[in-house]
Image (cartoon, rainbow, N blue to C red; front, side):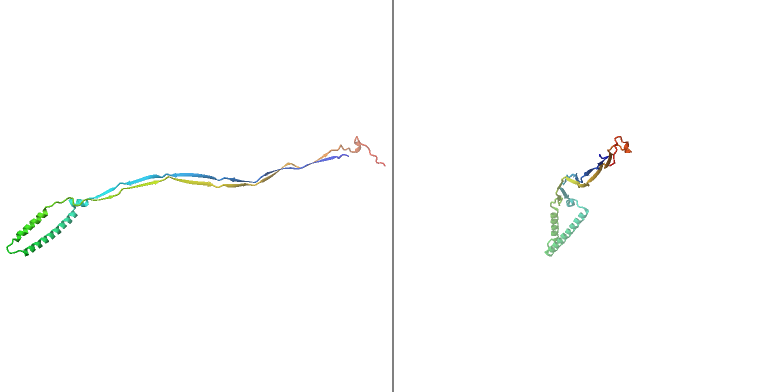
Length: 202
């Protein structure tokens, strides 16, 4: 006798997707800025300087009031010394005079000779030359080279970690299919056109 029921089982179907873990490294960046400071050449010079002081020379030609007073004082002092010397000489002469000598005549002659000696002569003006000094010249040269300034801006690298992933997808659900494969069932059985009676007698 053939089976009346056919049972079909459909298993579950699962699709699995995996994503591996990743470790990514982002490279660092570097930037450089260059700035320039300009140098230059500077030259400073000073010419020779001559200093001429004519104060004493001018005073010898046309003295100032203070210098004139000083000179007059010196002349007065010198005249006093000379008069003292003259009086001393005359006193000695008078002490050595003999009876009947003309002392007054000798005094007059000596005085005239002194005046002649003092009045004759040459003098140069100005008596004092100018005082000359000088400052030497100078030259300063300064050269400064250009300067380059480097400014670095560095960004460090960075690591980025992406964890792994597992994804499950059910593409087919499990099923059980029950199918009746037999013929029609008649109730009562005698209604089956192909019914055969069964003799149960012994």
